[in-house]
Image 1 (cartoon, rainbow, N blue to C red):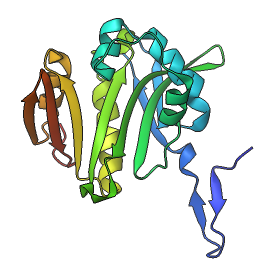
Image 2 (image 1 turned 30 degrees about the vertical axis):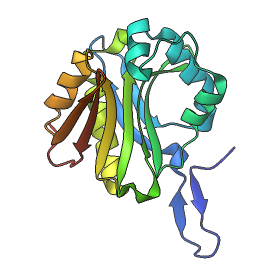
Image 3 (image 1 turned 90 degrees about the horizontal axis):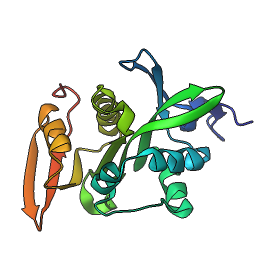
Image 4 (image 1 turned 180 degrees about the horizontal axis):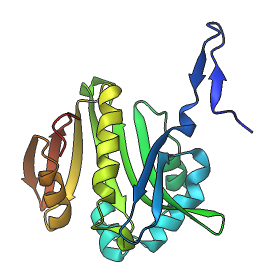
Length: 196
């Protein structure tokens, strides 16, 4: 089994293996506690499971298209991040020894020349929406991203997705928006100090 602490080859100093990053616990309205942690490569099946528990509306708003399946190859890409230019924080519940992902917040730098602008997305399983989990996932992602030289998130949001538009507005973070063909292109300047 892989250790949570790894040794650097030449420096001899110990360094955290970022696959084991934990971001704490979040209490849901029903009293359950969701664990917040970094996504890992072994989360592929958990991400597919989350996709199948999403309503068609949540799938459409997340992917901007109707989908019936999340291809395994795409789930594998979502589960494999480098913890710097790409990162995802998942919220999990463990029941009867099985861990389920119930929410994900992620970013990926658009390109090296994008000067710290990353595409970002967030999704929470319908049964756990409107409980503050999405806000907490975003708060953790903003803090993490800012510490890794990300200065802004870019999101593509369908114009009818009023829930996420209000969510972004309530964050308190400065935004610029451009509407094109029924889709908002939103850039959110990230500053953990401004996040509400």
